[in-house]
Image (cartoon, rainbow, N blue to C red):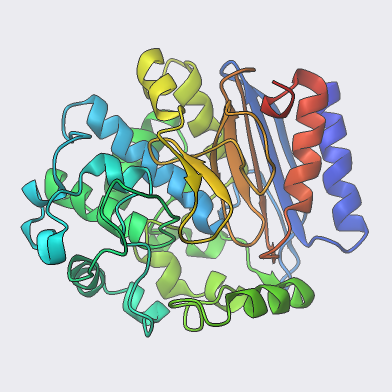
Length: 369
Protein backbone atom coordinates (compact mmCIF):
# COMPACT_ATOMS: atom_id res chain seq x y z
CA UNK A 1 0.00 0.00 0.00
CA UNK A 2 1.32 3.46 -0.91
CA UNK A 3 2.03 5.92 1.88
CA UNK A 4 -0.67 8.32 0.67
CA UNK A 5 -3.23 5.53 0.69
CA UNK A 6 -2.23 4.58 4.24
CA UNK A 7 -2.67 8.18 5.36
CA UNK A 8 -6.08 8.52 3.72
CA UNK A 9 -7.17 5.16 5.15
CA UNK A 10 -6.14 6.37 8.61
CA UNK A 11 -8.35 9.46 8.19
CA UNK A 12 -11.36 7.36 7.21
CA UNK A 13 -10.81 4.86 10.03
CA UNK A 14 -10.52 7.66 12.59
CA UNK A 15 -13.73 9.33 11.44
CA UNK A 16 -15.69 6.09 11.52
CA UNK A 17 -14.09 4.96 14.78
CA UNK A 18 -15.00 8.23 16.52
CA UNK A 19 -18.64 7.95 15.45
CA UNK A 20 -18.40 11.10 13.33
CA UNK A 21 -19.11 9.09 10.18
CA UNK A 22 -21.00 5.88 9.35
CA UNK A 23 -19.50 4.83 6.01
CA UNK A 24 -16.88 6.47 3.79
CA UNK A 25 -15.04 6.10 0.51
CA UNK A 26 -12.10 8.11 -0.79
CA UNK A 27 -10.25 7.84 -4.08
CA UNK A 28 -7.31 9.70 -5.59
CA UNK A 29 -5.93 9.56 -9.13
CA UNK A 30 -2.84 11.31 -10.42
CA UNK A 31 -1.87 11.53 -14.09
CA UNK A 32 -4.26 8.70 -14.90
CA UNK A 33 -3.07 6.36 -12.14
CA UNK A 34 -5.22 5.23 -9.18
CA UNK A 35 -3.23 6.03 -6.02
CA UNK A 36 -5.91 5.72 -3.33
CA UNK A 37 -8.96 3.47 -3.14
CA UNK A 38 -9.91 3.52 0.54
CA UNK A 39 -13.13 2.59 2.36
CA UNK A 40 -14.30 2.38 5.95
CA UNK A 41 -17.43 1.70 7.93
CA UNK A 42 -20.95 0.56 7.20
CA UNK A 43 -22.95 0.95 4.00
CA UNK A 44 -26.27 -0.23 5.48
CA UNK A 45 -26.83 0.19 9.22
CA UNK A 46 -29.87 -2.10 9.13
CA UNK A 47 -27.89 -5.12 7.93
CA UNK A 48 -24.33 -4.21 8.86
CA UNK A 49 -23.24 -4.50 5.22
CA UNK A 50 -19.78 -2.92 5.00
CA UNK A 51 -18.72 -0.28 2.53
CA UNK A 52 -16.91 -1.71 -0.50
CA UNK A 53 -14.99 0.14 -3.20
CA UNK A 54 -17.84 -0.39 -5.67
CA UNK A 55 -20.66 0.69 -3.31
CA UNK A 56 -22.54 3.58 -4.94
CA UNK A 57 -23.47 6.50 -2.67
CA UNK A 58 -26.10 9.14 -3.31
CA UNK A 59 -23.84 12.19 -3.64
CA UNK A 60 -26.40 14.94 -4.34
CA UNK A 61 -24.98 17.83 -6.39
CA UNK A 62 -21.67 16.06 -6.88
CA UNK A 63 -23.75 14.65 -9.75
CA UNK A 64 -23.56 18.01 -11.53
CA UNK A 65 -20.04 17.04 -12.51
CA UNK A 66 -21.41 13.94 -14.25
CA UNK A 67 -24.00 15.99 -16.13
CA UNK A 68 -21.43 18.62 -17.13
CA UNK A 69 -19.08 15.93 -18.38
CA UNK A 70 -21.76 14.34 -20.58
CA UNK A 71 -22.59 17.73 -22.09
CA UNK A 72 -18.95 18.63 -22.71
CA UNK A 73 -18.25 15.29 -24.38
CA UNK A 74 -21.26 15.86 -26.65
CA UNK A 75 -20.02 19.38 -27.45
CA UNK A 76 -16.63 17.95 -28.37
CA UNK A 77 -18.34 15.44 -30.66
CA UNK A 78 -20.40 18.15 -32.36
CA UNK A 79 -23.74 16.90 -31.03
CA UNK A 80 -24.27 20.09 -29.01
CA UNK A 81 -23.07 23.67 -29.57
CA UNK A 82 -22.07 25.87 -26.64
CA UNK A 83 -23.33 29.05 -28.26
CA UNK A 84 -26.51 27.70 -29.83
CA UNK A 85 -29.74 29.04 -28.33
CA UNK A 86 -31.58 26.51 -26.17
CA UNK A 87 -34.70 27.15 -28.27
CA UNK A 88 -33.10 25.56 -31.34
CA UNK A 89 -33.66 22.19 -29.68
CA UNK A 90 -36.37 23.18 -27.20
CA UNK A 91 -38.63 25.91 -28.66
CA UNK A 92 -40.92 26.04 -25.60
CA UNK A 93 -38.01 27.21 -23.48
CA UNK A 94 -38.19 30.67 -25.09
CA UNK A 95 -41.18 31.74 -22.97
CA UNK A 96 -40.90 35.04 -21.06
CA UNK A 97 -37.97 36.37 -23.04
CA UNK A 98 -35.60 33.43 -22.59
CA UNK A 99 -35.05 32.95 -26.34
CA UNK A 100 -31.48 34.25 -26.16
CA UNK A 101 -30.38 31.71 -23.55
CA UNK A 102 -27.53 29.54 -24.82
CA UNK A 103 -26.09 26.24 -23.67
CA UNK A 104 -23.09 28.21 -22.38
CA UNK A 105 -25.41 30.26 -20.14
CA UNK A 106 -26.88 27.09 -18.66
CA UNK A 107 -23.50 25.47 -18.00
CA UNK A 108 -22.19 28.61 -16.28
CA UNK A 109 -25.24 29.09 -14.01
CA UNK A 110 -26.03 32.37 -15.74
CA UNK A 111 -29.30 31.34 -17.44
CA UNK A 112 -31.40 33.25 -14.90
CA UNK A 113 -33.74 30.40 -13.91
CA UNK A 114 -32.26 29.19 -10.60
CA UNK A 115 -35.55 28.25 -8.95
CA UNK A 116 -38.36 25.80 -9.50
CA UNK A 117 -41.89 26.81 -8.44
CA UNK A 118 -41.94 27.11 -4.63
CA UNK A 119 -44.43 24.25 -4.17
CA UNK A 120 -42.29 21.74 -6.12
CA UNK A 121 -41.88 18.41 -4.33
CA UNK A 122 -39.61 15.40 -4.80
CA UNK A 123 -42.61 13.60 -6.31
CA UNK A 124 -42.77 16.36 -8.93
CA UNK A 125 -39.07 15.97 -9.72
CA UNK A 126 -39.70 12.32 -10.60
CA UNK A 127 -41.96 13.52 -13.46
CA UNK A 128 -39.48 14.54 -16.17
CA UNK A 129 -41.94 16.06 -18.64
CA UNK A 130 -43.82 18.07 -16.03
CA UNK A 131 -40.65 19.46 -14.44
CA UNK A 132 -39.19 20.43 -17.80
CA UNK A 133 -42.45 22.15 -18.72
CA UNK A 134 -42.35 24.08 -15.44
CA UNK A 135 -38.77 25.21 -16.11
CA UNK A 136 -39.60 26.23 -19.67
CA UNK A 137 -42.54 28.32 -18.43
CA UNK A 138 -40.43 30.16 -15.83
CA UNK A 139 -39.72 33.86 -16.21
CA UNK A 140 -36.00 34.59 -15.77
CA UNK A 141 -34.82 36.27 -12.58
CA UNK A 142 -32.21 38.18 -14.59
CA UNK A 143 -31.33 38.65 -18.25
CA UNK A 144 -29.50 35.45 -19.27
CA UNK A 145 -25.77 36.05 -19.32
CA UNK A 146 -25.85 39.26 -17.26
CA UNK A 147 -25.38 37.62 -13.84
CA UNK A 148 -24.82 34.18 -12.36
CA UNK A 149 -26.31 32.23 -9.49
CA UNK A 150 -26.34 28.58 -8.53
CA UNK A 151 -29.05 26.64 -10.39
CA UNK A 152 -29.46 23.80 -7.89
CA UNK A 153 -31.95 21.64 -9.78
CA UNK A 154 -32.87 23.56 -12.93
CA UNK A 155 -29.27 23.15 -14.14
CA UNK A 156 -29.77 19.41 -14.54
CA UNK A 157 -33.21 19.52 -16.06
CA UNK A 158 -32.30 22.05 -18.75
CA UNK A 159 -29.09 20.25 -19.67
CA UNK A 160 -30.77 16.86 -19.48
CA UNK A 161 -33.60 17.94 -21.76
CA UNK A 162 -31.13 19.32 -24.30
CA UNK A 163 -29.24 16.01 -24.22
CA UNK A 164 -32.50 14.09 -24.64
CA UNK A 165 -33.59 16.18 -27.61
CA UNK A 166 -30.17 16.03 -29.26
CA UNK A 167 -29.65 12.27 -28.82
CA UNK A 168 -33.14 10.79 -28.40
CA UNK A 169 -31.91 9.18 -25.16
CA UNK A 170 -32.25 10.11 -21.48
CA UNK A 171 -29.12 11.60 -20.00
CA UNK A 172 -28.62 8.59 -17.70
CA UNK A 173 -28.26 6.39 -20.78
CA UNK A 174 -25.93 8.86 -22.48
CA UNK A 175 -23.79 9.04 -19.33
CA UNK A 176 -23.38 5.27 -19.50
CA UNK A 177 -22.57 5.27 -23.22
CA UNK A 178 -20.09 8.14 -23.47
CA UNK A 179 -18.52 8.22 -19.99
CA UNK A 180 -19.17 5.30 -17.65
CA UNK A 181 -18.90 2.35 -20.05
CA UNK A 182 -15.69 3.55 -21.75
CA UNK A 183 -14.14 4.03 -18.30
CA UNK A 184 -15.31 0.64 -17.01
CA UNK A 185 -17.48 2.11 -14.23
CA UNK A 186 -20.98 1.62 -15.65
CA UNK A 187 -22.06 -0.14 -12.44
CA UNK A 188 -20.75 2.65 -10.18
CA UNK A 189 -21.60 5.98 -11.85
CA UNK A 190 -25.25 6.98 -12.21
CA UNK A 191 -27.74 9.76 -12.67
CA UNK A 192 -30.89 7.60 -12.66
CA UNK A 193 -29.89 4.36 -10.91
CA UNK A 194 -30.84 1.11 -12.73
CA UNK A 195 -33.19 -1.19 -10.86
CA UNK A 196 -30.56 -3.89 -10.60
CA UNK A 197 -28.17 -1.61 -8.69
CA UNK A 198 -30.55 -0.39 -5.98
CA UNK A 199 -29.71 -3.13 -3.47
CA UNK A 200 -25.99 -2.28 -3.72
CA UNK A 201 -26.40 1.36 -2.71
CA UNK A 202 -25.31 2.81 0.60
CA UNK A 203 -28.16 3.65 2.96
CA UNK A 204 -28.20 7.02 4.67
CA UNK A 205 -28.68 8.36 8.18
CA UNK A 206 -29.13 11.99 9.19
CA UNK A 207 -26.73 14.11 11.17
CA UNK A 208 -29.47 15.79 13.27
CA UNK A 209 -27.43 18.83 14.36
CA UNK A 210 -26.24 19.69 10.86
CA UNK A 211 -29.61 18.98 9.23
CA UNK A 212 -31.41 21.24 11.72
CA UNK A 213 -28.94 24.05 11.03
CA UNK A 214 -29.36 23.67 7.26
CA UNK A 215 -33.16 23.66 7.58
CA UNK A 216 -32.96 26.94 9.49
CA UNK A 217 -30.67 28.46 6.86
CA UNK A 218 -33.08 27.49 4.06
CA UNK A 219 -36.21 28.75 5.79
CA UNK A 220 -37.98 31.21 3.52
CA UNK A 221 -35.93 30.49 0.40
CA UNK A 222 -37.72 29.72 -2.86
CA UNK A 223 -38.62 26.03 -2.94
CA UNK A 224 -36.58 25.40 0.19
CA UNK A 225 -39.33 24.06 2.41
CA UNK A 226 -40.46 21.27 0.08
CA UNK A 227 -37.03 20.18 -1.16
CA UNK A 228 -35.04 19.99 2.07
CA UNK A 229 -32.33 17.36 2.00
CA UNK A 230 -32.32 14.45 4.38
CA UNK A 231 -31.65 10.76 4.70
CA UNK A 232 -35.26 9.98 3.83
CA UNK A 233 -34.75 11.60 0.42
CA UNK A 234 -31.34 9.96 -0.11
CA UNK A 235 -32.94 6.56 0.56
CA UNK A 236 -36.02 7.08 -1.66
CA UNK A 237 -35.96 4.52 -4.45
CA UNK A 238 -38.07 6.65 -6.80
CA UNK A 239 -35.74 9.65 -6.39
CA UNK A 240 -32.71 7.45 -6.96
CA UNK A 241 -34.22 5.69 -9.97
CA UNK A 242 -35.36 8.80 -11.85
CA UNK A 243 -33.18 11.17 -13.82
CA UNK A 244 -32.78 14.30 -11.69
CA UNK A 245 -29.47 15.35 -13.23
CA UNK A 246 -28.63 18.10 -10.77
CA UNK A 247 -27.89 15.19 -8.42
CA UNK A 248 -26.26 11.79 -8.83
CA UNK A 249 -25.18 8.48 -7.29
CA UNK A 250 -21.63 7.14 -7.52
CA UNK A 251 -18.66 5.48 -5.90
CA UNK A 252 -15.72 7.68 -5.02
CA UNK A 253 -13.35 5.74 -7.27
CA UNK A 254 -15.72 5.99 -10.25
CA UNK A 255 -16.16 9.77 -10.08
CA UNK A 256 -12.44 10.31 -9.36
CA UNK A 257 -11.73 8.19 -12.45
CA UNK A 258 -14.06 10.37 -14.52
CA UNK A 259 -12.23 13.54 -13.44
CA UNK A 260 -8.89 11.85 -14.07
CA UNK A 261 -10.00 11.08 -17.63
CA UNK A 262 -10.81 14.76 -18.17
CA UNK A 263 -7.19 15.63 -17.40
CA UNK A 264 -5.28 12.63 -18.74
CA UNK A 265 -5.59 9.27 -20.40
CA UNK A 266 -6.89 6.56 -18.06
CA UNK A 267 -6.30 3.02 -19.31
CA UNK A 268 -6.48 4.24 -22.89
CA UNK A 269 -9.50 6.53 -22.41
CA UNK A 270 -9.43 10.31 -22.43
CA UNK A 271 -12.78 12.10 -22.36
CA UNK A 272 -11.66 15.48 -23.75
CA UNK A 273 -8.57 16.65 -25.63
CA UNK A 274 -6.21 18.87 -23.59
CA UNK A 275 -7.39 22.20 -25.02
CA UNK A 276 -11.04 21.42 -24.29
CA UNK A 277 -10.19 20.15 -20.81
CA UNK A 278 -8.50 23.47 -20.06
CA UNK A 279 -11.51 25.36 -21.40
CA UNK A 280 -14.09 23.57 -19.25
CA UNK A 281 -11.95 24.15 -16.14
CA UNK A 282 -11.42 27.87 -16.75
CA UNK A 283 -13.67 30.38 -14.96
CA UNK A 284 -16.32 31.62 -17.37
CA UNK A 285 -18.39 33.58 -14.86
CA UNK A 286 -17.08 35.12 -11.65
CA UNK A 287 -18.56 37.48 -9.12
CA UNK A 288 -21.49 37.64 -6.72
CA UNK A 289 -23.72 34.56 -6.74
CA UNK A 290 -27.29 35.81 -7.06
CA UNK A 291 -28.71 32.64 -5.54
CA UNK A 292 -26.61 31.60 -2.56
CA UNK A 293 -24.67 34.79 -1.87
CA UNK A 294 -20.94 35.33 -1.69
CA UNK A 295 -18.66 35.10 -4.68
CA UNK A 296 -18.48 32.15 -7.03
CA UNK A 297 -16.71 31.10 -10.19
CA UNK A 298 -18.16 28.65 -12.69
CA UNK A 299 -16.50 26.95 -15.63
CA UNK A 300 -18.43 25.00 -18.24
CA UNK A 301 -20.62 23.10 -15.79
CA UNK A 302 -18.19 22.85 -12.87
CA UNK A 303 -17.51 25.02 -9.85
CA UNK A 304 -14.01 26.45 -10.19
CA UNK A 305 -11.86 27.22 -7.17
CA UNK A 306 -14.03 26.64 -4.10
CA UNK A 307 -15.21 23.02 -4.10
CA UNK A 308 -16.88 21.82 -0.91
CA UNK A 309 -16.66 25.31 0.62
CA UNK A 310 -12.84 25.25 0.49
CA UNK A 311 -11.40 28.37 -1.18
CA UNK A 312 -8.49 27.88 -3.53
CA UNK A 313 -6.87 29.32 -6.59
CA UNK A 314 -8.65 28.66 -9.86
CA UNK A 315 -6.95 25.36 -10.63
CA UNK A 316 -9.58 23.12 -9.02
CA UNK A 317 -12.80 22.30 -10.81
CA UNK A 318 -15.53 19.96 -9.69
CA UNK A 319 -18.75 19.72 -7.71
CA UNK A 320 -19.85 19.11 -4.13
CA UNK A 321 -23.13 17.84 -2.77
CA UNK A 322 -25.39 18.55 0.17
CA UNK A 323 -24.52 15.68 2.48
CA UNK A 324 -20.75 16.12 2.40
CA UNK A 325 -19.67 14.23 -0.72
CA UNK A 326 -17.47 16.04 -3.26
CA UNK A 327 -15.12 15.46 -6.19
CA UNK A 328 -12.68 17.61 -8.11
CA UNK A 329 -9.66 17.65 -10.38
CA UNK A 330 -6.69 19.99 -10.08
CA UNK A 331 -5.19 21.16 -13.34
CA UNK A 332 -2.03 22.30 -11.53
CA UNK A 333 -1.11 18.90 -10.11
CA UNK A 334 -2.98 16.41 -12.31
CA UNK A 335 -4.73 15.04 -9.23
CA UNK A 336 -8.39 14.09 -8.96
CA UNK A 337 -10.02 13.42 -5.60
CA UNK A 338 -13.43 12.14 -4.49
CA UNK A 339 -15.02 11.46 -1.12
CA UNK A 340 -18.45 9.89 -0.60
CA UNK A 341 -20.26 9.28 2.69
CA UNK A 342 -23.64 8.23 4.09
CA UNK A 343 -24.08 10.32 7.22
CA UNK A 344 -25.98 13.15 5.58
CA UNK A 345 -24.35 16.35 6.76
CA UNK A 346 -25.56 19.36 4.76
CA UNK A 347 -23.35 22.02 6.30
CA UNK A 348 -19.90 20.46 6.82
CA UNK A 349 -17.38 18.68 4.60
CA UNK A 350 -15.08 17.39 7.35
CA UNK A 351 -14.15 14.08 5.70
CA UNK A 352 -13.56 15.77 2.34
CA UNK A 353 -11.45 18.52 3.95
CA UNK A 354 -9.28 16.01 5.75
CA UNK A 355 -8.71 13.82 2.70
CA UNK A 356 -7.94 16.85 0.58
CA UNK A 357 -5.42 18.02 3.19
CA UNK A 358 -3.58 14.70 2.87
CA UNK A 359 -3.53 15.05 -0.92
CA UNK A 360 -2.37 18.65 -0.72
CA UNK A 361 0.41 17.63 1.64
CA UNK A 362 1.59 15.04 -0.86
CA UNK A 363 1.25 16.96 -4.12
CA UNK A 364 0.20 20.54 -3.34
CA UNK A 365 -3.06 21.87 -4.73
CA UNK A 366 -4.76 25.00 -5.97
CA UNK A 367 -5.00 26.41 -2.47
CA UNK A 368 -1.22 26.87 -2.55
CA UNK A 369 -0.97 27.83 -6.22
